[in-house]
Length: 324
Length: 182
Image: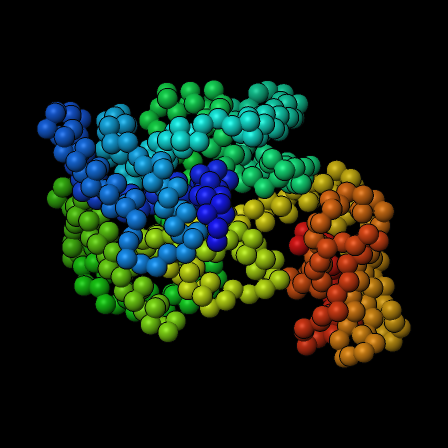
């Protein structure tokens, strides 16, 4: 591969394939962020010492997440992805500010997990870093103009059909981005600017250029406007059929967990109740807990996460043995 | 179990190796033109990035199908045959008619296989984009043919990998064929 071709690959990871780069960085960051999330758990007041510790922890996570995994052989595509990631390295002080502002990442909103909240904050921050790094090109201006045109058409059609404007937030919703994609595929699939654009990239454009979408984010906690939870799992990912081979291996791995973790997994995923998770409003466990082990919510969650970690290690090992 | 597997796999780290599995390649496989190699399957089991690419293409193919249906509906084109009557045997080529396309079956002249042809009527041809591929799928999800529409509005297949002959399938109760993007 020539230097020119390689530079083009890096550029692709900063433009057309940007969502891939962003999601890899976000994924790696969140995987290393347990200590960071512990530091900010249920925190309302930030003194200087805490801010200093958060900042130092973010620095450590960034090194782990974006530091290139040296020592392993890398293909040009892999290398290009890392080079692109390093060009948009997160800024510590901005991340500290975002974490201070966001309630969900501090575990203060019950319906959003802290990991989801952190993912959303990072995605927003990395999108901003990406626009800083790449600037605003003629091409992007033309893409945005096209996307806006499709969006306006869809909104006009909605108004004609329902006799009213769509609800607030519709323009910034994943449904709308998918409708735009369908409209492009229907009417202009060969358009050089938008023919191949995917809903994830359409979302990035709206996040930058659409006033309504920007207002929505700035009015609320970033993570509350999260559209797709964690893009990498959280039970929402479509798994390739070949992965059904992993199910019997996973069962064997569950059997190898220690009893408490196994019970927690059974409760969390198979709704079998050998243990009971205590809600804060029932500190004594209540009558239904008799004969079963009662765990606090925090302990339950800790055990669930540890069990998932052990299952991941066990499954990776067994899958690599199988494929040998 | 699927949700647990998904949560466990979400904890795998990503070192960028998933970048090797491209959108084009995943689309190629999902459209049935090829199968994943052992290496690609290994990437899919170990890389969250590769699985993200896979999930995105699954979703994009769904959106592509929705766009195709919308385009046909707007033009008043029916993409499905009605329930076909059991065809009388022995006469080839056998033509399965429909409002906006027809399907022709004939034994391959040189081998034991079958030649299957899809022919679009003019109105159907007019709404096709250049380089657009089509597939013909029966009521049980079996793909009969797949390919790009030629300048005569036709797609031909010389490959019939199934045990049951197409003429036998046609005699099945409730048998239907549907044109979809492919």
